[in-house]
Amino acid sequence: MTSDERFVILASSLGTVFEWYDFYLYGSLASIIGAQFFSAYPPATRDIFALLAFAAGFLVRPFGAIVFGRIGDIVGRKYTFLVTILIMGLSTFIVGLLPSAATIGFAAPVILIGLRLLQGLALGGEYGGAATYVAEHAPDGKRGYYTSFIQTTATLGLFLSLLVILFTRTLTGEEAFAQWAWRIPFLVSVLLLGVSVWIRLRLNESPVFQKMKDEGKSSKAPLTEAFANWSNAKIVLLALIGGTMGQGVVWYTGQFYALFFLQSILKVDGYTANLLIAWSLLLGTGFFVVFGILSDKIGRKPIIMGGCLIAALTFFPIFKMITTNANPALEKAIEATKVEVVADPAGCGDLFNPVGTRVFTAACDTARAFLAQSSVKYSTVPGPAGSGVKVTFNGKEVPYTDAKSGNPALTAAIAEAGYPKAGNPAIVKMAHPFDIFRPQVAAIIGLLFILVIFVTMVYGPIAAMLVELFPTKIRYTSMSLPYHIGNGWFGGLLPATAFAIVASTGDIYAGLWYPIVFALITAVVGFIFLPETKDVDIRST
Image (cartoon, rainbow, N blue to C red):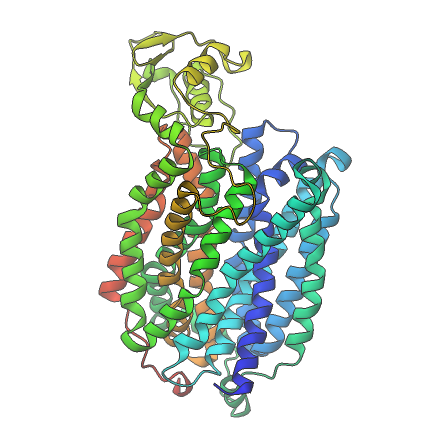
């Protein structure tokens, strides 16, 4: 690798790390942001709104891919992803300055969501530019290796955001952090923005794109050529269904849903949960490069599809083992206690509420929602027509009134059954960042590390594969759209949707069916229909 090639990879990767850092700060601090900007709603609804505001950034990523992909295929790679990082960095900095809902009312969440949309648009243009730029500099036979450094950036960005959050939390204390110090990581991003812009200004245009442009062969209408032409559009669809869709859900399960599962379902405190994820990322990030190199030797497809398949087959046992080690009291309570909500089916509605806007009033619904928020596993049993609602713990009826009463009898029954509240000594807790040698903590990090390995398998070779699937003149546009639909929509909506599935079924593991189903679809479609691309000459297309 020449010094110029090393600089290309460093500049592209470092700038993208900073951009992912900006993007993931919000996800890591979703619960605090919910309290700051959605304080007019009940706590459970705040969490859903906070996750949905996070998801809003993912929803617009495909539109950013279309807008900036078109510019990148017409104007060039370098200037396009210089613009995207400016938009991302400034939006993140403004979040750190934005007054809370207690200060400016309804305007606070509106502005916050607007900033999230800008971040999503910018990220939609960033990844395709960085991956294309590096791939077009890479020699034949090493594109998987070169582009794998871009693939580390999302995890490194998340890891960097977690480190800054943990450092700030330790320095200021939890109370101050929840009140005002959470803004510090957002404000610090302006320094990272300055470094990123300085580095990217020193880059030259991609030689493959520049040669094509000098020869007058660049596309005048990349959107039409990419999506209106069926020969290319069908490859876009295959790249989505047989590649990025499964990769996206495995990625977000292994990192974001794992963090959400620890905090919201297993009741692990935020400091410990972030430390556990941070250690797993530190141990696993190098495997992006390992699988990138391996894909240059055996192909992109077997690694990506194998990762999707193995992840789908092992998610349930891995998450159950995480529960065993992180909150053994919860696992014991689930195994020892059979909780049933007995009610007339006509009085029970659908609890599926991913947008958090539904208000439940029927006793059957409020009882089940209360149990779900307490991480209680329950089942719904049909009762006689016209009957009221009965909640039973191992056959013993517990009086239930309504949601407004606070349900003291139900709360007492949950505690008596052994379901622990947040802060219970039985729940894993790390005293400091290097408190990793206790068997309980080491086991959780090991399980999270396995999830990260799945992430590196599906994500390490994906950039090289996407670049190789499409011709140079429409490469930026064509690869960006399936990547951001797969990651932005199927992946980005995973935490809120999976949590809504948990609440509606009464099973803390039911949300895992979301990534399992999509990962299996990708494994099957990709194995059968997606072409192998490792030997494609991207300079001749």
